[in-house]
Image 1: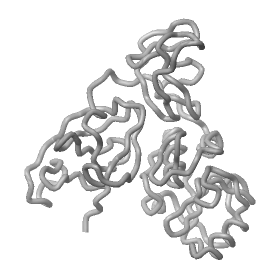
Image 2: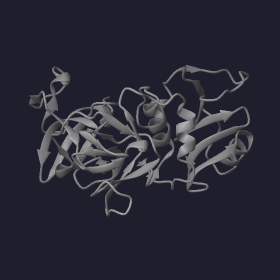
Image 3: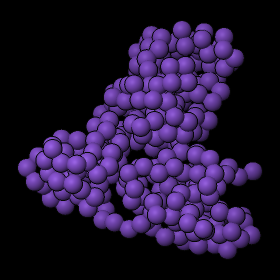
Image 4: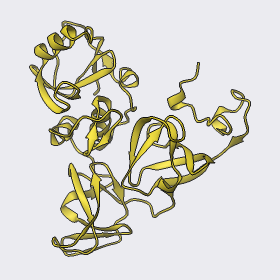
Length: 273
């Protein structure tokens, strides 16, 4: 059975990669990118949020219907519906936001009115610089908050730690709100590593560890419907509904708490080298 989340089929039109597997018309789709700072990826037009996409994310538009577009994210293959106004054309991004959050400004000065907020991982085309400011088609951004797209973060755990205190949000992928798998995906993408969007998909990353193998920084620990990243042998970091935020927690304490609250036992421990 096909997984709806990664099947590029709107129910009316499907991507040509599904040739021979579906009975609807096929399309190559339209190359586009997300042109809004943050947009929900929905399970159906006007439906529930599955994940979120950030400014500059490359997508393939497969279908359009009643103000919504059915898209496939080029980075992880996640499919769903977004507001049609969120997709469009633009110059190829040259830089990405490395700060947990920043702003687009109307002018290159700290006193200027902010136009929008941007989250870690957003991608922009820098067309020039004005002192300490990057000029982009969307506005000005502090240069110190950007890095060239080919320059990745060296450590995904440090990226996750930069988001400490971010409020928990089911399906969230941004500084405004993030969930457990969103935190892992944002951190791994910032480090230049492929990573799917949901915890059940992420459980296939890397290699499984035996229950007696010591955990190390960067390992992933999974429960049913939940994932956390190991900071050190005693501590993990995760976006969680217990504190409703991204927070540290002792590994033993988390295992006991989650089990006691009905969340079950650890299902897998994965090392992603």
